[in-house]
Image (cartoon, rainbow, N blue to C red; front, top):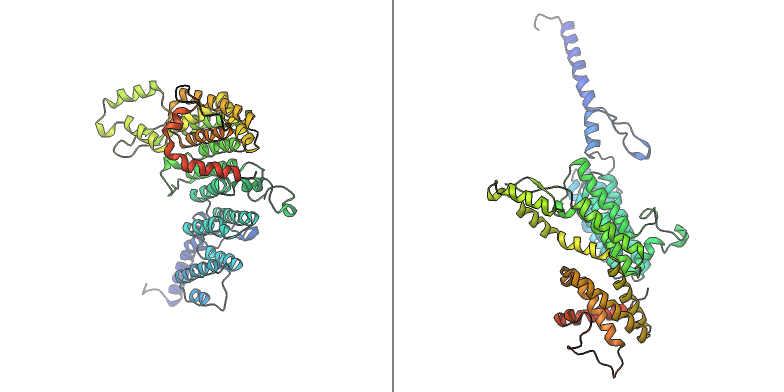
Length: 457
């Protein structure tokens, strides 16, 4: 190099700079913006593509007040401290019932921490459950439930590889809409939004574009959460995978149960249970799940007697710590697989559907003080229910079955004339065994009966 002239050295340096510019350009080329402010997929250099793939690129600091102390922290590089300050502001605004301020602060938090899963979980849950409970009108409560679900949806748009966010949407659509104290109104609002002028006497299309039952919408989101795991290989961190995978089928069962709770006992409800049984056994039960070390071989939950016998023969050649039959039973116990299999099978039978229908109609007639017809329907319904419980004895320990049987007994006893007494033990009456066995549960069952009598559909 010392023998080079000044010009030659300059040319070598220039050549080195040009050579180095090639990998630098390949690594650092900025991406092309796409419509809507998003980044064009596959554009830009290697680093830009990696940022887009892992969803790490940010172009905004959020809607932060430029004169606030939070902005000063941001300008000094204290992004984490600024975010913590906004979290505290959000808590103060919620206590002060400053809902517009809370919404604005929440928007700033998610712009500062768009890939922090707990932000989306906490704030979405907060709006759907906590903020909604602060309002008096059911329509206002439903509005904030929707805001919480939509917040989860925004999180899903920013973090499409997180199966948890899909699950949160499904969980809120299912449980919050279908099981809260306002479930009667919420389920109606899910089909016909209370803001009839805006949504033209239909559902909020952001939540329910296909106008489906809330449990079926929940089922689609649970299916998407499972598919996200399969597509990206990102495991969820909510519960054991074998439980997480069951939620689409459990949502189908919830849908069938909701139809019965709404007083629909026709072929639609029976078929819904039939589909639940098929999906539980042919999709969820037929899937293989890895057993933990040291066994490590995959097992499935739906196992025939022939398959189980083959597994036993293979287990005889394995050391005890690697035998699979025990893990199959443990997984079945963990998921309550056998019970839900029986439950779906029973509910798909016509006799059980008739039992539910007669008990429901008898309850409605008792509420209307038509005691003669109510007594007849309740007696026939209890008789059919007892017939099914004798056939499928596992259901005698099911909480929902016990509740249905005891409430039917209470309504039936209300229908008896003052002079008329309940048949004595010798004569017997339907569901007598359950009635005698679960007397300790009567106080809570009577509370549920009183709630049903007050309920307005």
